[in-house]
Image (cartoon, rainbow, N blue to C red; front, side, top):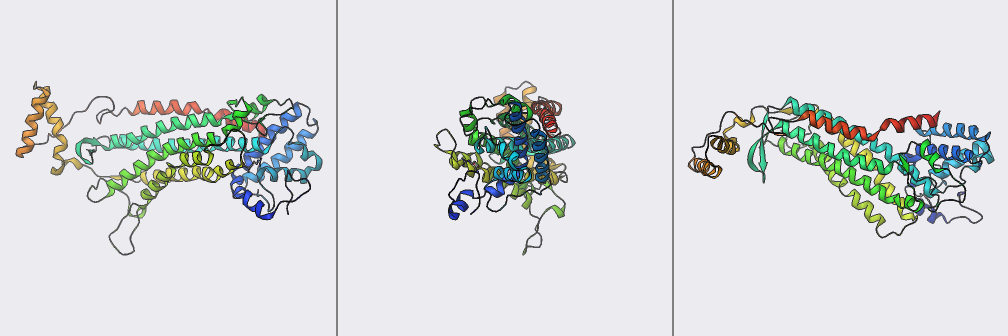
Length: 445
Ligand code: ARG
């Protein structure tokens, strides 16, 4: 029976240990570098309020830096019999430094440690999702401009409606992802608040300097109220999950469009053979498996906010072990979404767009409104023009015009790419990634 941080004299039944530890040893590996950084900030703060002697601070910081290096280089693991990352870090520290290592847990609890780890992990993971989304936005905007004159059928009810363009289609998903980045920004700001010092959820009788750890870790501000800081476990994950689901929504819809447009009856776009997959029986197949899997993964991600909500349903304030389970669905979601964003980009970098699609006779009725509008421009009241063109369609005499003129903002003749880029730049600037990066660098010096 292994030694626990909280163990005094009696041991724990091994079945109970296995059940309660669950997947924590795997999940906590992702939190490890953040746990160590949190300990560096906490230790520095403890020295400032004389809970750690000044000469011991550099010793502790050096040992923590060593452990940090291990976590970054993939050398860190949680040993058999050790419950979680918090216990493992403390164990490594006491192994290296003896009694000095035993001092750093003053004024904190694993409850605010895991809260802190999750905030720091999430803050960084949102940064990665945001940058990946932004890279895709850039590509979509490039494609939008490159194909601004390539027309595409626009549908309502999945029936031919009006002329659209690849310029509009690519640009639409760029703008959609920019709105999602705004959701990510809100989630980022909620994550960028320091819960450390809430300890078990009710603060501490030590005169902790919470502003100091807030600054050391580069947080925008602290979660002021210690009870609320603890309530942030679960609530933060849910807010963040909503932002991830928002990105997934855009990406899933884009993938569905691609699957449809690759279909032979549509035939709007294609990919080089090596990016499609074959069939074991039908020799002609070139399937869109990549976009089908993105679609399914993104659809599954729509459930994440609800899954988090269900784990935390009806929990009163204060810490509960239930919260541990959120890590298993929350932490892997980031890599999942990032891999979808990356592969979507890889595919779209090589997309081939069919030219002159709308020259085909079968698309001629896409232009009825153009002709109606031409008649209106010539002075006919709209309803009369509508009837006139309707009769041409009925009699089979309707002829599509050879040119169309759309000029207003956001239409196929005026994509407003510069404005869309500006909107993106504004959202991106709101993150202030540099501030955090500098704080972490300083802490590691
Ligand atoms: N593995 C735990 C979690 O993720 C860490 C906190 C444990 N705290 C406790 N009071 N048992 O929630």
